[in-house]
Length: 290
Length: 265
Image (cartoon, rainbow over the protein chains, first blue to last red):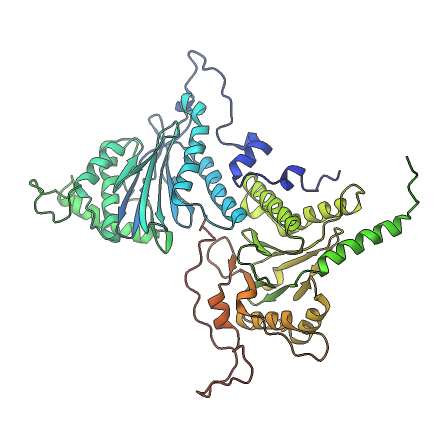
């Protein structure tokens, strides 16, 4: 048989999933397929050797959803990279942000992008929003053995659901558990602070621009209290990666636009370093209860 | 056990080729036309779901005539091959030439192996480049032959008639509406004195590899409403009363692209 002939497996009808096909044909290319062996006492943990990505936040607004991530990757006490990108488009109407082991996570996102595109090309239609979220859960679940060794990947998935005409957010745990979040969510080491910040800043009636400002504020608050989360780097002009997804599709905001938002926020923080103050009684906010 | 009759290899191959050709000539034609911004595929295909033209990868598309189950199989294999290659190397390392080669080898070995029936299919594999000169169109026949096509190419049932029409009317570097009109007219061409057929828009399947698309995925299907607006008025003799010419007007702007292409960085 000629080598350049298409292998028989390629011509066999099968799954529309690229990850399944990869598992059959080239399992060594799967992100979570490495066997690290038993942990040896005294050996450094795998998690300490690899750079970690930190905080991702997402929030919905009427007509879409915003996802943003800081730019820092850390390795123990060292800043491994100060301009890493941790939010990626998954397809035209969704984005995925990753916290955890950066190398594995980036590879997983690459596989996920191919997975969605592959399905679309084979089937001639796109997956439903829930279908996309479930596929990502399956990829995370396959990574569980690695997570047990300290190489966890925790994504945040957000997209515009064309069928329901709303922005939706899904969070995951290392076992592949998939949870739909309402309004906003954050993952990663600074997520506690980011979520606290969004609790006070988020309103359901925020427009697109205000929603972008709210997530950038939340990232600043995360960086303020979490050493592993990077704040806006004013000297190098490195600002968060922000994706906005609406019915028209997803776009990454141009750096100039994010820089403008960040500069505005920092100008405010010069006056009040803790950021905008929320009214104490909560009554001055006209939006509905959450 | 009876002794098989001796059949000369020439006769064997001829029989297999005749078999494949007969199957292919039963189907309707597919036209591929190079235009200013890329490569256009048009086919007469009443089905909205069973496509003859499909996306393989960022810059690569596939068109086929013949038996649906066979070319669908080849299409899926092509998508798998391209995605596998793009995933293990890089998106830029997926080329139309490599795909055409893989198809040629596959079709060739199936054709010449005695065990399998030859595939009754013909394929186009096209890749759009950064400039019209870099566009590539390959034609693959049932026996694994590859031909490099330029300008326009036709395969399927009435290929000779359609090719003859295109030879007369094709112009290089045309814009999309003009190229589409030429291709549709060619598909409707009828041999002899009989008037050419006017193909209903609903029966057309058209797609482009458009190098001007900002997304990395350059493949785009043309929607029927757009085709309708791009084609010159279909009924001859029905001159517009406002005195405007019946020539191809500027078609209405294509709305934002259908969800077929994520902007993968």
